[in-house]
Length: 233
View 1 (cartoon, one colour):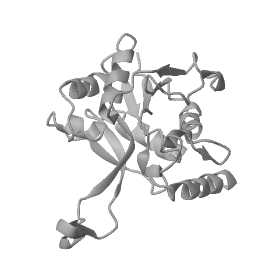
View 2 (view 1 turned 180 degrees about the horizontal axis):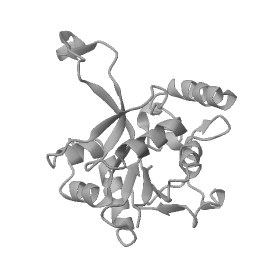
View 3 (view 1 turned 60 degrees about the vertical axis):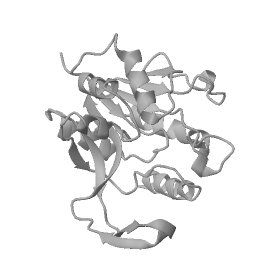
View 4 (view 1 turned 60 degrees about the horizontal axis):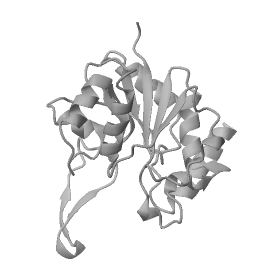
């Protein structure tokens, strides 16, 4: 039997850096919420078998009535943790009864609504036979400075071989579960860092600079422009 592809979207964060009244995944973007854009891009991909949205137990903004997809390809679990890694780990626990160890899990940021369909398909294809898994990422283009006290430059850091991690991050269910159950601390900032702790090396797959994570207020207008340009193409 072919391996399944399951998307886990952790969406339990508050997004304090956006300085908004709502968590950033519920802000409006081009006529829809950020979260709706993010989920729809996966629902449009036939290779995706199921999506699991992980929200906090006390989330008052999510309305199941607005999501007719629930019960078909979309499921919701109110098991969000106090960190992204904890939310993903708890989501994987919800999936244990239905997934095999070699099924693929793609973890994607709820506030990353501009993933291009071609980049998603490229990730699926490049990692199909990859033993460890991998992530979308882009090479660092800007000059990097290491800061000291008072935000004064200590030195310039070489950007050679440095990449900026994006999502989706795609790993086998059994391996990812093992990595996250082994322990979570401040050094586990994404799924790849948990896999790396096992001594493994995820593959970097070229992504796009348009696949931004909405973090600051100025990110929303840029994301809207990206979506508008894509719809006009």
